Length: 72
Image (tube, rainbow, N blue to C red; front, side, top):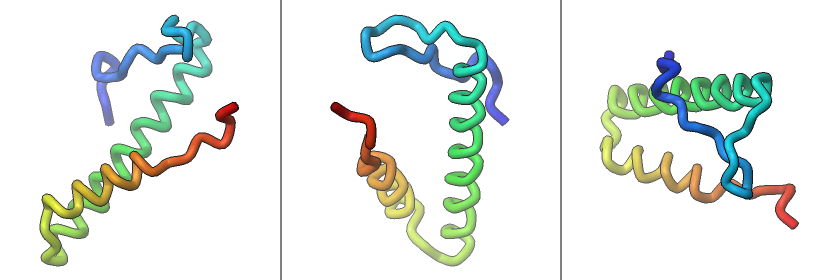
């Protein structure tokens, strides 16, 4: 689990901090879930003999390729 001081300050598109406590809670929970799942995927891959560097690159590419369905 990530410590509270390891979470980013979530910002709006205008650069202002997100102020809603519930929204911040959801964002932080989602970040923890992603980190845990990525950690598990990395560990599984390494245990199965995959190259750690390649796995990290694939995970980074996966995140970079996410599409914002709300973009105007």
